[in-house]
Image (cartoon, rainbow, N blue to C red):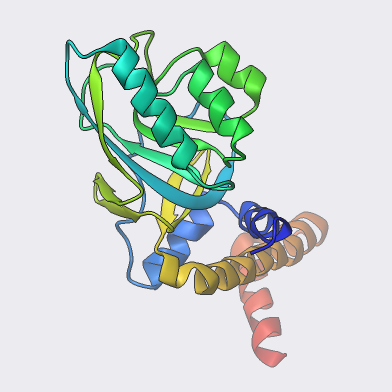
Length: 230
């Protein structure tokens, strides 16, 4: 895959939104691929789209800061460009993603980060410009409070199953994970849904209701009749 293809794929997905992706997955019978609603972007305008890279950690106190720093750098170095590291931290109250991690991920060419735990150094994250989605913000350092157990594998967050290579789409509405085998089909359906929504907005909301003064019920009925006659 060339460097331009992941960027173009991300651009096309970002032209839609997490809500539309969720709707499409519902239609395909995959209604459990939305991450818990507590996971939100650090800043509302942040959007993320890219292949998932699963990371799993567990709470563990009293570990060596130096050892965990080395292991964290090893893990970060393994993440391919354009991917989205997705952390399952299994609880705890600490921030595995902070200013240094976000800088390293940006330098590695990652598309963003999603964590089912905390983040910190928010000002530094905002300066880096890397989209970060987290369950909460906490000043508590993770290095002596958790242990990285695996990465590049499969995890579950809430009801959502996330395998490395699945596709992540996130915005201020939340984060959705598309199974890799469905990615292209979902993208096609999302683009069709966005075009249909824009048609409804233009022809119903702007033209029939705003400009022609029709009632919402009459406007939608008129629009449906026009569509069926095409």
